[in-house]
Length: 220
Image (tube, rainbow, N blue to C red):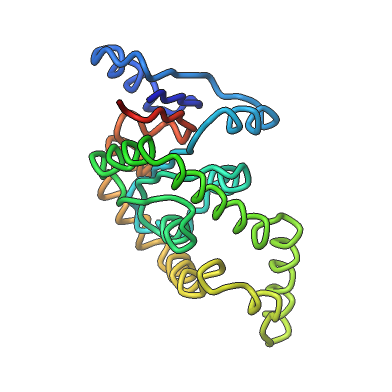
């Protein structure tokens, strides 16, 4: 199984050193690439990996890579809590374990390598979700509708027509509560991670810098 990791996160030097020390010749590190190269990279991959740290604000994160992977028809293997993981699981667009569950993620990779047909099906499920509900014009129209409806004191019908597990009203409630409790949450982060509330510092496994595709080859 080959892993191709793209990016330059603060944990990359430690990840490169760890891979070297462990003699992991199947892990390849790459510099960041322009956005216009992403489709070609994803076309050469079998699945996409995603990981996310733990945070009191977990339900306000929505990463571009999630839509990139789905739009490319790639199954997603993820170690993350929060609404992104629930979205992947609800639409069977991949498989998910909790944040920092390294052994669980390794098992997902092994399962994917041995079940290419299931991987293809999960990729198709994700692409269908992205095509039907996550196209940028549709998102912008719903966003505008929600803002105008809120100002007028009415409900946005365009948002109401979206399946609940896509828009996830409960997530919106949590996000709103997170915004209201921002000062308290920031205090939690400051206490846990130091003066600068960066949830990644000192807590992220060395390989987290990659949210990159991998290529799977069934085991013997």
